[in-house]
Length: 256
Figure 1 (cartoon, rainbow, N blue to C red):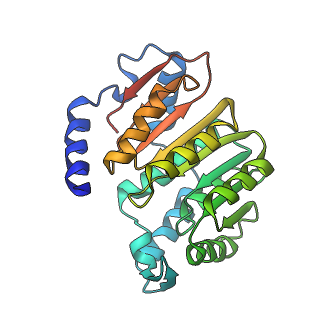
Figure 2: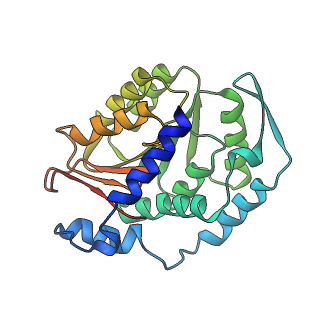
């Protein structure tokens, strides 16, 4: 059922996506964001280093033991195809664009996305939460190897650790929330509501996996309808959300 939904959601996205390059977008802010952040083609200096790391990990035979009670290969967690690298680079560009100094991530995985965001500004603080201890330990090892000293990895009970992480972060500039089919609707909603409470008018929230299942899609619809949310952009694999009341309350489905 989950696979069928993802395929159907992809078809719907293909049929409804518009606004590539900012065409027919009346908001000056969004027009600038689409052209100089979302569709920016000039390479940032950090891409070479970080993309090389992803490609190396995607060929690794290393396994992480204890992930959800089993074992998983690092290569399975880290994709290095052009689509995956493009999404990683986008996180980096958004952090640069909004001058993110306080970043909160829920769903660390192998730690790659946190590294891309940390590379945007060495003065920033990235707090990332992974409920699975084995994955959190691997991410911590990767960040140390890459010499990113501005990342703190949290693990353990999702609700308790997220509450602590947000309390320490205070006002947050950038959120990255990774949804998956294993999350219940209640957990997804609780994560969104908790993060929403730490947002300010300049905050940006990036939500991964908004169409991977019926539950994640329902959460995305709830986010779009939220009165605290102003502007939303749906690029299928991710939803990008702003909380600035000066921006138009509208959701754009952008062909990306």
